[in-house]
Amino acid sequence: MRRPGLHTALRVVLPLAVAAALIGAWQIAASNGAIAEALNIEPVFVPSPAEVAGALWDNRTLLLENAWVTLREILIGLGTGIVLGILLSVAMRFSWLLRDTFYPIAVALQAVPIVVLAPILVVWFNYGVWPKVIIVAIACFFPILVATLDGLRSVDPEAVKMMRTLDASRWAIFRRVEAPTALPSFFSGAKIAVAIAPIVALFAELAGANSGLMLVITQANNNFREDLVFAAALILAVIGVLLVGLTALAQRLVVTWR
Amino acid sequence: MSVVARGLSHAYGELRSLDSIDLEAANGEVLALVGPSGCGKSTLLEIACGLREPGAGTIEVEGDADATGRLSHAAYMPQRDLLLPWFSALDNAALALRNRGAGRTDARREAGALFERFGLAGFEAARPQELSGGMRQRVAFLRTLVAGKPVLALDEPFASLDAISRAEMQEWLAGALRTDRRTVLLVSHDIEEALYLADRVIVLSARPGRIVAELRAPDPRAADRDAVVTDPSFVAVREQALRALHAGAR
Image (cartoon, rainbow over all chains, first blue to last red; front, side, top):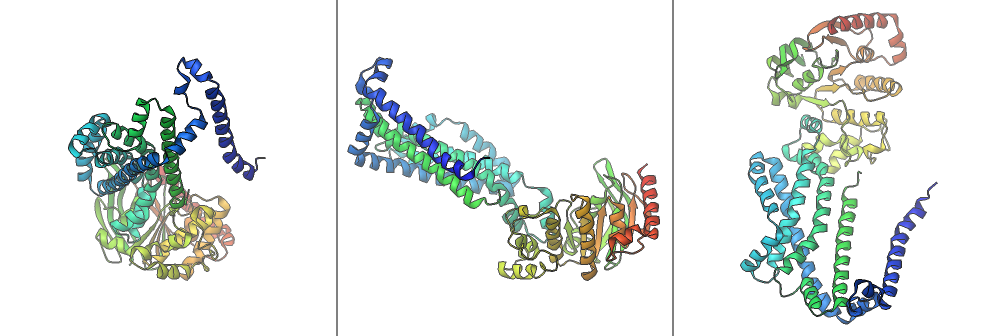
């Protein structure tokens, strides 16, 4: 018999224990120079977790300021992408003309690699936040559009007939049947969007930025400050985990019938 | 007359599903349609409800021959209960009222008033997935009834239930129709169910569906189902219906 309480506790304890063990092993291997020796590099290039923690604390203002820049790019881009994805998928559901016109364009836009798009947008919009926001939005809106459209297409035609004989308008059918049917698919798309948004934001910063975590990482790397690189990466990991966690939480709160 | 069909035919492309159907149902009459699978029974219901247009012939529901008019007079209860899992039992039952623009509170009050009588008291807030098959069908029927339309189109309402719950639900539906008279078009593949619930049973042939027999039920919707279905007069009509069904299936 598996006890649910025990299972829940293990789900929290096990990942933490494994992470702690890995960090401990890394601490030992980094501080006695085993990793550097194995890689045949200077020990200074292999910061121990303690050194990363030190760099995190010593550079907290620099890291937080730039993390806020990157986080803002991610959030505004993601938000724009989600809103666009929802609006477009709903519009395409209501009008086949819109769908046949804009779906191929969306696919084509998606097919343009971000590495190509980013430098162009930097030239057009300068080094500020906007080229990053636009790129994150473009990258995030596509999975939302595709997933939500799929969800809307999976609506049971029998349920629509039933609603019609219960005097439902087109809007009532959308609101009470189609939109709830599509919600789980929308969240699948949102999870993909949330997972790629930080990566895309960093790519966009790489193409040209005067602030942001990628700038910190690039400069630290050029100065052989690997401890700072790891510290920035740690912040990114936290942002990623928070975004995915919040999306999962939102799904649990909204999709209560599964 | 509540429902009148004359020379009604329908085809899905090359596939003919209904062939010159003539039928009438009086106000408050329960008319059952039985026939082999694919004989167009469900198509006939969809046409009656204004969800589909006939290929030839006419059908009038409460005097209206056009699809919009038929749609406004008939409510359709599909084979599967199709309760919406994101709504409570009460909100599912109140769907028609909400669709017509009633506020949430008013709609819930109106639909909730019927829960007691339908043996659903206490389950207002339950989600459909928490209800048994029989209860789900009752909520689905309630949802159809709350629409307040004079004609109900029931498409094999109990096909998904096991034999025991099915007999119980037939008895229950008989009771519900005794207190709330509506014109009912009932599609079934179960002759016993049709003869017990309906005033008249129309037997359709295999595709394309034609009327091969019309039988009057001996004791429609009697309180004691077990006594009725084992009565010699019932058994005799059932045999007649079975023979017609088999002859039509060939």
